[in-house]
Length: 586
Ligand SMILES: Nc1ncnc2c1ncn2[C@@H]1O[C@H](COP(=O)(O)OP(=O)(O)OP(=O)(O)O)[C@@H](O)[C@H]1O
Image (cartoon, rainbow, N blue to C red; front, top):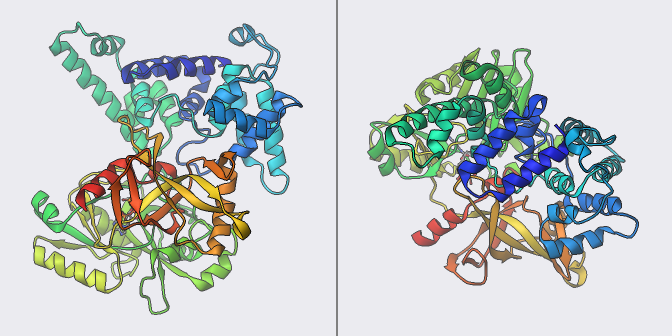
């Protein structure tokens, strides 16, 4: 497929607001994608790599602006691009507003142009670009990107700019891609029509919906297990439901973490006959993969590879585990007496690229595993928690400190005593789990409840900042924070401001935060900068107030910086809905 055609179809999808119509256009696109199906299924989500793959293009707004400026001609600078961004508000529109001399016209659709960009070629160029590392890699990336822009017509440029910055903005979320894969290759055309057509009688429509929902469930299961939309799209087309049923967990390919809601022992006892109670460890989530040849890889809750920063966990697993396994757990920091250290300590180790050896001396980390998703060839996702926990104990040894203690209780007093002991030992709280529940990847359902007495903090996205004054003029000082707005389709692509934080940050941290955020600056005006939503701050506060000052309608009273949540991304930051709930409950 020509990239120009992809761009035309993406533009069409962008103008459509009805969910069903988006799914229908997407499914047409998938059917027409031929050999490029897996790439197209990723591109529509602004992805070059599958969700489980931590490889990134590592192209920040600055680099993208520079590449656009170069392609636009000698009279255009990156500052000009930023000025235009301030006017047009969106990088795709900016890229489309320049004439890069792409030379196609009708040839794009006939494939007759000499230098037309195909989806496959763009994919391989971007993959090569992502692989560039070391000194000079910035320059290589800039040249490649500039070369690509140079070959684009405005519509292609629009989607190329958005793709490299991972923000397609065409209203396509994971849910719509999932539904479109099912509709393209599994749902009978007459069922699709019956569902969409207002005139269908209710019985026919209900039957058609049931068949479609079954198809979607098969695609959803395969996606949960693999986190690979491209692969699942291809399997659906080539092998149908039978092929989807064969998609298994693969050791080495991360799975989305199951998440928890806040809840109490009373809630848990009301729902289930018995409650599985565990310590809530105050560390960072880690998924442990140990393959047949003994290779260990560790992934964060964003499915990012964190193997290198945590060598002692790798060594522990190498020494302890024989079979291929996938375990879920928490990596915690310990003092010399084996007492848990605060969460901030573990963040000093997590995702660290330099000085791992030195930091290993300063902060000792250990694994606390609480779930087992795969062991010795058996996928365990659909097994009850108690069975999975038994397998975990077999894998690591029943007496191992690395296995969470799981108390099965029907008694509120017993659970309260467990909680007191957990808190006295310095843990964060307890987890209350449904002992019969399967492991549902990526789901924040009611089967896991978290209970912690501490004052709540918020994990908010930095969307802007101000340069400091005087001796701090070179550093970003005040940070604008936003909560995530989860749209109904789960696309979660919007952010609403809720406050500014400048308190609680040391001079040393200001330097680090500036280094972290400067490459993400989208535009500047005087002292104010707009920042691409990517970095998450944990922020404490005294109260959430209603306020017209910020776009969320709320403001934080006495906000204070706690830490950078290195283990979170803009997509996993707290939502406005959570802010609303907290505001109501105070
Ligand atoms: N025994 C346990 N079982 C499950 N999760 C645990 C356990 N102990 C600690 N955790 C951690 O607790 C997290 C959930 O609680 P918490 O709300 O404190 O985390 P968060 O990262 O701030 O928010 P969330 O993960 O819910 O978005 C899990 O993601 C996991 O990392």
